[in-house]
Amino acid sequence: MSRHVFFCCTLVIALIMISHQAAFGWGGPTHSALTTKTFDDPVVSPLLGGIDQGAIEGYIGEPGDWQDGQWDNVEARAYVSGMSSPNGKDWDSLDETTRLKYMTHNVADVCVPIGHSPACYDPGGYSHTINEGILELQVSAWGSYPSVAGTTSYTHNRNGHSYNFTGNINQVLDEAYDAIRDNMTWFKSTKHFWGHYPEDNSDAGWNGTTIALMLQRAMMVDYFLSKEDVYMEPDTLPTGSAGGVITFDESNSYDPDSVYWNSNGTYSQKYGIYSQGIQYFLYDFNGDVPSGGAWDYMTTDEHLEFSVNDLISFGVPTNQWSGFWKAGVDNEGNYGYAHDWMYLSTGGAPEPASLSLLAVGALALVRKRRKR
Image (cartoon, rainbow, N blue to C red; front, side, top):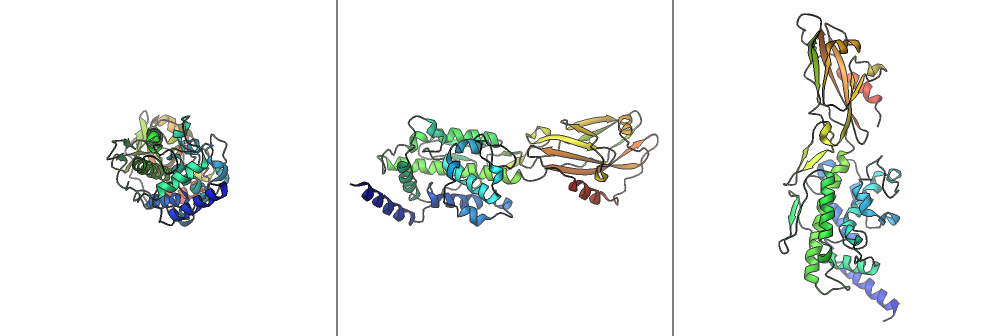
């Protein structure tokens, strides 16, 4: 058979298989279907406001030279603006739609034990384009996506392979890496085009697709939450007298993308400086930041104690309620602010704080000074 005849036959087979409404796998149309499935996930869908979902879902191309080292790009979360890629890829130069196209494509590709995957670090890994293309098309004709909504644990009912996607984003990535490697031999039981063990290969295809869906869901949530500001918990109107101390407690503040994936498919927030998200806190004790003043104190402690005398030295007035500001800064450079009141007494009980003071207007001034 000539090379041209072989190419034409392959093309005809490809067109026939694509026309079967490909449901899962890793060919172009199935990359698109995988992303649509992820966008429909009840955990992901509430986060999608303002993006061009159609352009991302319809992306069936290849990200050009971005294929090289795709797992490194995924592992480093290099799609988050401001974070460098270990491969020197300039993610910051891409608009958000393109960045999400590449990210979803890469996540799908690395779950395939051919060509781009951690499994291909094995010397026996496939890397031949024709083998990859045929297997992607074969997988695309096998059925519908397995459901991952409501769970982060998947056990294949025939071979007993169990993958538990729980923990923070780095633990989820580690689990995905191990799951992909574990699925390698199973998927590669199909050796030559249509294969010797198509049933086993089909099962492994389902398994790889489920890994891709779980990983893509976790990455999507991480991406969208990473753009949100730090949440700073207001204090409860701290008061103190001369010789005493005032405590500032930030243990209920959090970085939105510092989440822990639960075994039921939901995620829980991680709070405080130990959440692996908040980098430090800033305090403006005398309340002059909105008018051009400087932050008075920076700390990585979420429980902070100051003597009343120390606070007076920062310019906090005594015997009256005075406003102060605090901020948290996360690892993406997002700020979050809170405004509250304290009373430093030189004697006698404080009067109740007025709730009619213009804290909201002051917050608007601080946000104008915000640095990302």
